[in-house]
Amino acid sequence: MQIEALRDIVLEILDDMKAKDVVVLDVRGKTSITDIMIVASGTSDRHVKSIAQSVEFKAKQAGEMPLGTEGVEDGEWALVDLNGVVVHVMLPKVRDFYHLERLWSVDEVTNSGQSQESK
Image (cartoon, rainbow, N blue to C red; front, side, top):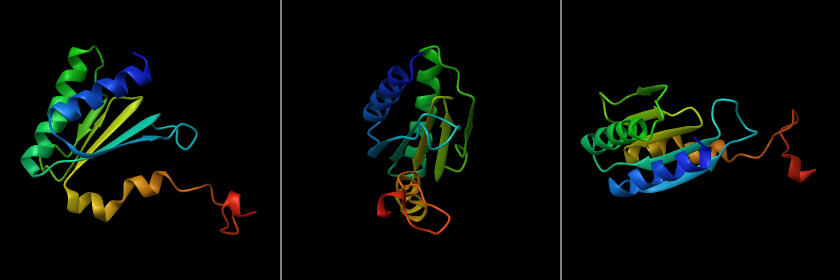
């Protein structure tokens, strides 16, 4: 399945499950782990679990077998690895603490600590 089609399926699931504050990060060229990261919030641990389980189930229905899931038992931060798309679903307090969006949107930094754009 094409990455963009998988991304769109995940976004539709997140919308259907009423996930909050959905952010799509294109991390191609920044990591070899995945091409797209999607970060979303759930309103409770039960909501986080339900969202992650729905992403996993509906991805399977679409023919995309998840490589793995983590954190579904606790429900504070669940991760669904769909190979080309990795989905993070978190409680707002966990998301605020880790700031994944900021982590993956940082400009390249040289050894001197200056960003490439400041040179």
